[in-house]
Image 1 (cartoon, rainbow, N blue to C red):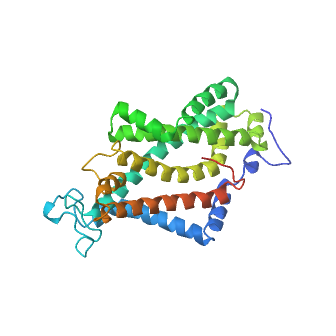
Image 2 (cartoon, helix red, strand yellow):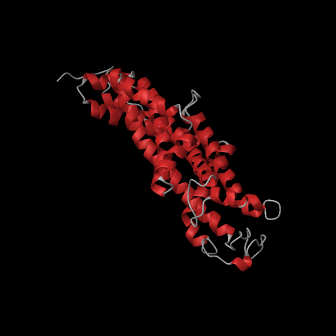
Image 3 (cartoon, helix red, strand yellow):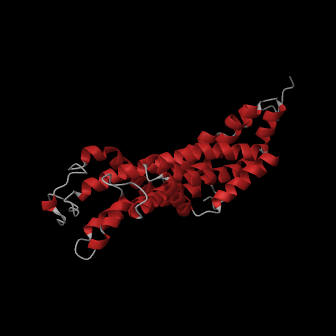
Length: 299
């Protein structure tokens, strides 16, 4: 077999040190105060979601009508809703549910979209044309409209909510992966892999996709916040998580009619939703600056 050499270097020698670049970029990322704030806030929200069942002061579904609409106090730090349920407990459990749905939907979108986009960008030709036309059809439909349509047909159960939120993410990951693969596959080390007779499967999964991680990581952080907001919107409209399971969107909707005399019912879940969106959006912006220096619009 013919050995491919470039100035005495092997194929492995000319493959970029992706992990070294990632660590160095992460250090630079944490050198900026705003990025430290966003990263710290994101970690705090994740820890709160993980520990929610243990730090919630009351069971989230404990009903006590005699304590309904109680304002914030030492006993109930965020007050109670119309059924006497502790809002703090429901907000904490709601964070666990929202982050879990967001994470699962993004993981499904990432795995499926990266695979589809990688195949499309690497092989090109008719395969690329067919895949991209299908992706463009789904991309032309607003995400919330697509989710509402699917849930209206399938029903507002948790698996179908995750499915409805995942489909749009698959197309977004496929598009950004395809574009990155088109660039990466022209690099010298990929040509060297072809020259030494590596299989297409090994080239895609060992040498091409691992070097597309920057834009994919950025997109993941941005879409996680986007999915949480979409899930809250669905719940607000009555098409998402159903009672008695708490969701920030449902809690905000339930408190709408009490805003004039019991604003805490909507304000506190809305505040947590705002902080979550702020954390992931700032994190995504910071990661984009360091992992995607070209500054392209990846969403």
